[in-house]
Image 1 (tube, rainbow, N blue to C red):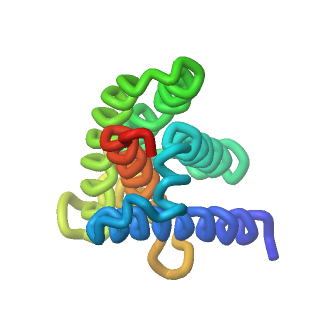
Image 2 (tube, rainbow, N blue to C red):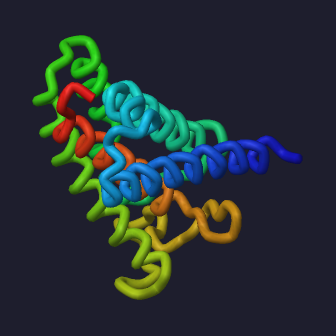
Length: 177
């Protein structure tokens, strides 16, 4: 197993775990299971979990670009612009226990989701084309990584942003859970 294959598998498992947690949280929310111990735990640690999600996204993107030498396309840079500051914002939220820190995180996540969805649609061939985003740049339609046959970098970003938004929702609706 090569280093890239191992890393892809590790990132894939982590991303699927985040997706599973997001789905479970929304199912419990829909079913009104706010008294569930798991729900309470996740709601109580919303800043910490989002901080870890942002850290994982940043470390993953830096590993792909700096260790495995996948140059990011223009939209990947915009996705990074929406994710990287969240580590600082969420860290300040943990330190200050200021729930208002979520507003900035939510705004960045919504913008990041928009870029992620567009990039997914571009890679699927639904919008745009195969041309590079900028002259001599990397094609945004090129898929460098596919994990488990469906998980690409923009889909991972979409899941990470959805995770941050899910925990922002928990933080917003938290009533001393």
